[in-house]
Amino acid sequence: MRSEREAEKAAFLAASGFGDARRAPFDGDASTRVFERLRLADGSTRFFMDQPPALESVVCPPEAGDAERIALGYNAAARLAAGSVAAFVTAAAWLRERGLSAPRIDAFDAALGLVVLEDLGDGLFATLIGDGQDERPLYEAAVDAQVAMQSEPPPSVLSYEGLSWPLLTYDTLALKVATDTFLEFWPPFAGLPPFGPAAVAEWDALWAPVWVRGEAGADVFTHRDFHARNLLWLPERAGVARVGMVDFQDALRAHPAWDLLHLLQDARRDVAPELEAAMLDRFLAVRPELDRAAFLADYRALAASNAARILGRVFARQALLGRTQYESYMPRTWRYLERNLQDPDLVGLKAWFDRHVPPEARR
Image 1 (cartoon, rainbow, N blue to C red):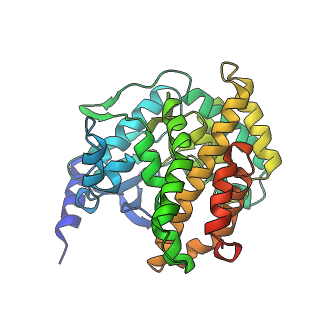
Image 2 (image 1 turned 60 degrees about the vertical axis):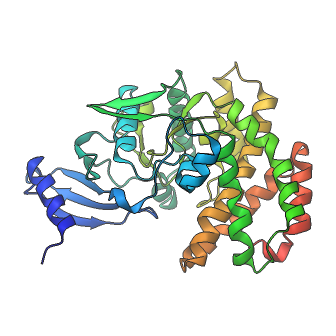
Image 3 (image 1 turned 180 degrees about the horizontal axis):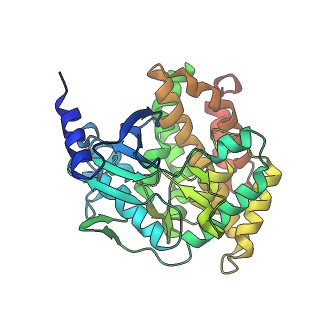
């Protein structure tokens, strides 16, 4: 007997003109979303995204204070979109209006959590590079796309066809609760005792200036998960439109280093330090208004914070749930973190990790 959700999906597709499409499952990501590829009679394809709204916790009310956000849960505190279709659709529209290649939205029902969207193909940067394609032109195009994405002040609200979504700031609390997941999930994963009150207090004091700088510099539209598995190569298009983008529903107003550090310190593939340095030079060459030394210091500090978040919230948490495939990414992320901690401004944080996380617990 067909489930109620399947009936809703079939009715939505029929009402949107896609009822006769052949549906095939498609491997998605670690989120609560489910994807199918639709094959139409004319030979074209689309993606069908199913994001049941009830599967995620509540999002951050725009005017909520820190205490309310913490009480509402991680998504609200960290200002994640919780899979919101409104967030995805409005962010896609904003990007497309600026000549960037987010998927075209062909149909949506925000209340049901259903979207039919353009199929940008299978040319993921990570796949192409793994198959031997020269990575440097891809990374150059991705950096140029970031420059275009940051070329104008972001709006306070994104909108599209009756939908609206607040573009909030990646603020101090959001950065803190994300980084703090290392304290929660790494000890049980690595077999360490919980960090004591003194260690936690020192952690907070050492990271606080980093988080404050992150919020102070938050003045550009930020994809928030900009890396080689969320970017597709579209060589038939021109300029920055050659970079297809997906998984941008958690977009925020953030520091201009944020998307760069995701791209250039990719937790799921090695990016050589030489390529990282060249792409940072490329970015800064067209952003002369940025103070180079200050920007690079922020970049390394925020990258360290992000590496701690990934090791905790993403990898250790998933491994504790039995998804052991994430363990293979951990050594690379530790290398990024340790490299960032060589920055003289982060000497206190390096000492904290050296005291509390021995080498054998960094795996």
